[in-house]
Image (cartoon, rainbow, N blue to C red; front, top):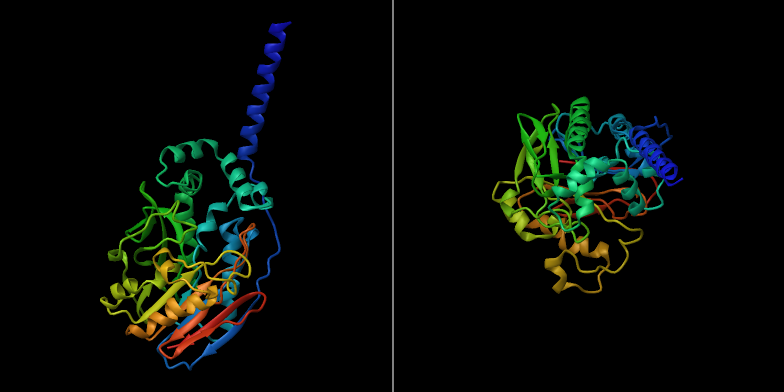
Length: 371
């Protein structure tokens, strides 16, 4: 009797393992409807043949990351709208928001990931879908948030390939320069025009693609990770800040909270920066008008009862750009709802005369600044 019971349990275990293996491999095709519309918030100045900065504040949801093709269709629709309004040319620099590439970690994943109630549940389903890869990534882990590090590390190669194919392809198709927001990757580098990943720490990085689709310079690493990301991303040195040459001028990219640091601008001024792009991300709903908690960490001693929005205006690009030789800059936030994270932030175009903010309105917003 005991022998039969043991055999039965072994058969059940074997059946469960076979079913789990089949579930891991099963990736059903997905179809969904997404709002591809966008509206022009403002276009400032006149076309003088010097090019323009075009900010795209997208409205993104979980399902937009089911595949790289889904995200491509949405961003291409925004660029089509800009093209119809005469806002694209060979000297256009398109600026996208922070972490727009990081969520490529969800590409190709199972329905359970996208149907999850919150990000924590989605992360569990993501890990369960890749047990062997997850174990290997946990062994290679270098962050204090081991699970977050492992999930991003185990899909890093595919994420890097999708990021370059997507944003480099859009840049080439539309003949524009694209500041491709940012993406979290392990020790990334560009070799012979190809974005590659390494075995080192995770960095939040931005890459600029020229109008031929080829990366300009090396991935720009974030110097001052926000408190929400410093448990799994490393901080780069100020020496890593770089300026790249675009048809519109010499461009510097400061990711999110890096735009709050005077030292960041000093490093770019030394390289004769002419334009500034700030991909940004502010999670949570209605945080822009809420009390500023005093971030980033090196500014907490100056915290007062400012709102989050007032703090961005007082301490980031609008306050810093007039101290540089740069003619213009843009801060671009992501909007939409990715799992339970929420999103907030008012994107802005900035000149030495001051900022112009995108007004609150539903849907994706385009805003343009002629140089």
